[in-house]
Amino acid sequence: MEKRCIAVIGLDGLSFTYLNKLMDNGVIPYMKHYIYNSSIKRNLYAFPPVTPQSWTSIMTGVNIGKHGIYGFIMYDDQHNPKVFNAEMLGHPRIHEMLSLIGKKSIVINPIPTYPLYPIRKALQFSFDFFTPKPSYTPSRAKKYFRIMQSLFKDLSKTPEESLEIAKIHVELYLQLIEELINKEDYDLFWINLRYPDSMIHMLKDPHILSSKIFKEEMEIFRNIDRIFKTLAENSLNTVIVSDHGFSIYKYVININSYLYRNGFITLRDEAQTSDEIHGSLKKYKDIKTISWKKSVVRILRSPYLRFLGRFLKNIHNRISKKPIVIRFPVVDRRKSKAFAGTFYSFNVFVNDYNVVDSVITSLKNLPGIRGVYRKEQLFWGPYLSRLPDIYVEPWFDKGYYVFNTREIDPQNAPILSRKILPHHHPLGVFIMKKWSYGELPDPIPNYLVTNLIMIDLGVPISSEADGIMILRRALGKKPLVTSKYLTKWGIVMKLRKSLRKMK
Ligand SMILES: [Zn+2]
Image 1 (cartoon, rainbow, N blue to C red):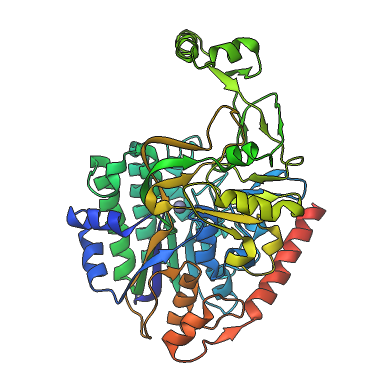
Image 2: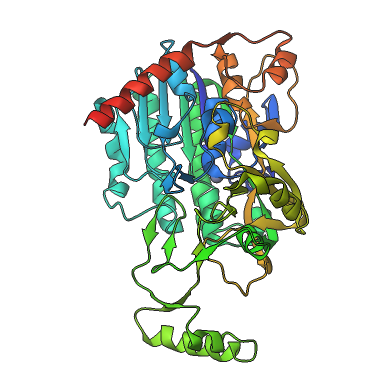
């Protein structure tokens, strides 16, 4: 087959430091050669450096205020949490736009990955990235989907589970891509992979970012190099992009602990502990919880007896099948004046608008915080009202990170120093083999990616596309735009939603 237009490989959490480590160790010889000969090598800027919102910006060409996906967990008007999904999208992604002008796409793990809507001239597959159920569309894609099924017939297995599974996972992706490349035509081939992100989180070794290299890690990236080679050799242009990078952190800021201490949070007791991370709103079943208010817990947590409390807990956990966990009160999202989104959210929701300024002033006094912003200072667009009101930027480069819990231990300080751990950083990578236009800034904002690819394809970008000033400078003229994508896609989405309601 002739060379097709453009291929994109998305590598979650890839930073230049990590990429250099792989290249220096000879793990990715083909990619190394390719990167060396690429015309664009830029840092990519993503704030917040969180997977759902950053990939969605990368794939739509717009900022969070225009696509509306602001995190893993989205809250409705009643503050009920819901895992982000494609129904919440406010702007079409690149393959959805290309389909409207008759261009062909093959997309693996389009984010949000779920649900997958049938799109004309597009083969789509969702395997991971918080996909509740692996799926594909249209039905003729089944023969390719089957290649991955040997892994995913057992849905309990996810690539995050072990390096062994991750290795098989990438081998299967390689087979899938070779099949697709040999048999299918495309204008755009886009694949997002969970690496190195899932591996770094799994190993939790700070040295993995720049020096240490694991055997399985090498095998995984040797196959990613083969995937890249297959894509690059069959396409006129190829892009490597990541949604954020990684760095190492020594301090963890719990914004909710701080807001609680400053009187913005109301706590309430909850019967059970629940976990709202990574797409699963699951309740713990296999643990026994005991309220922090119980007098025995209080006594054993006092400074003099803490060691004894810990000792007794360890003994209990060793002999009992149900380990014991102290149950702390949780943030009452309805009654609190302001609260932070749980876990790795760099934001604060404000219920009482009279306190916005005092929350901002208060957060600015917290050490380790570089900036506190009203959402409209960072984002713009029709979905701004949906977004959390305040964004908090820690001093990433001084070793501060954010981890907000929904449970509050009233004894805990808002900033905890812990052993050094790797976690997300706002700088990812953007590498493009061919770029026929002028200079681009460094770093480039994440929402620029889709627009650069569409310009390379010679098609108009969305009239809502962000980064127009940068593009105008690089092109020497105003880029070609159209409002057709958004209006046509909007009509189809409305139809789908009303059809679903009728069911
Ligand atoms: Zn990510």
